[in-house]
Image (cartoon, rainbow, N blue to C red; front, top):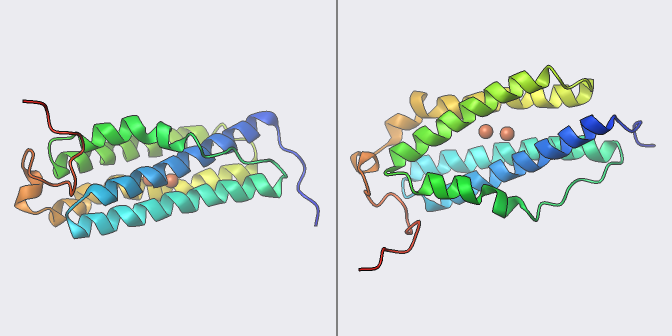
Length: 171
Ligand SMILES: [Fe+2]
Ligand SMILES: [Fe+2]
């Protein structure tokens, strides 16, 4: 079976960008999960990582079906570094989860707006398919995650991370 016709350059750029963004999201959640001591929260974050990697696969499928080379993911670690550092330096697990929840809400809003400008129907369908998951990630903390927190998870510097996010300050 031959590949589908080559899409417009702007659609290819968009799909490649979405692919990298979703893979970066998956890695961000995975790294965050590794740093969390609360088992219930870690489990949820690992599921979110799986969701983001699944979304990345949908974009990858779209690209491959049209014979478009996917971008390399070498830069993904550098791409998540600022967001990861910001999240890990939050005062408590509760604050970390609030930050990520508002980030996901912004992502869902942004995708809703972007989807109206994606003229390729198959690509638009992929974008629209990811939105409920991103909104679900945003809604998880206020609806579910908040109740998973132990008292220590709400405290400043409560030792929520299994390993320190940064080296201790010199004395
Ligand atoms: Fe996603
Ligand atoms: Fe998400």
